[in-house]
Image 1 (cartoon, rainbow, N blue to C red):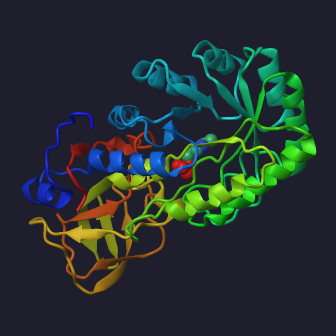
Image 2: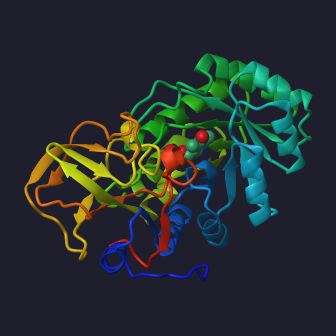
Length: 375
Ligand SMILES: *Cc1c(COP(=O)(O)O)cnc(C)c1O
């Protein structure tokens, strides 16, 4: 554990003593370390981290100190950030669309693995040229199943395209690999096994023995619905590895599954009107994921830290900006005794909050508070 200064035992006791306005992001490094250890102990291969999920230096430093094996980076700026914190650690550049200048920055920083999902992008890598011994991982996409939303609509080669790409990678002299992303917040372990079996079929059809298979991220966060048991996911991945004649080294690159559950986010209630609530933060700030992911199961705290438990009343919930799009999806059941000055405490907010919060309309500020535990 890094020696981060813990300022409160947990969010409720902090909020009971601090009534300043503004959202508060709670971070429990001890929980991050425990989650990392569950991945390191249970995942049958190398554990890397997708930086975009939460690029905060305290999170990255904790992962480095905890022995993470590498990082999935997507831009020269993410590469610089990791190189500053961990000069020798493995970098996997898995954003498959790159400009020549971005490729050059990756080569200069010693990127060891590159994903590719299209012939023109492979042409760019080979023309750069990549140094001998680089790994090139063909990114596969299948129709989405089990995830909160579809990653395959943006990146990934179809199985037929993947066969052709992998054959070219095999002939290029670089190290052939494959990768995929089942989609974020995927609660169905079978999705990984399905992708892995198809990957094995593709490698066979291409006549290429892949050195490594990167099974991506997508591991779910609890979102207030009980701790995630990773064992069924790791077991499905182990079964999937059995589909290969020669077992590839496995790599995973979770974002959300590592960092979401070690954070909580408290947002104050500014105003209540019949059928409506106005909060201190919304979709341009720390709640930007809620329209696509849904609202996690939350609790509402009175200023003294006690739980509001009144019979639920559905309200439309707005953020603080003057934009009418700034509202949470649907209607949200809030306790009937909720009052202005209460705080809503959202769980599992460690992913896709840092890095996507805007300052639109002058909002977007928050306090960061390190805690020993989240409950
Ligand atoms: C975003 C991303 C991840 C992390 O996804 P999660 O669903 O947060 O685990 C992993 N790999 C790649 C290539 C990504 O773009």
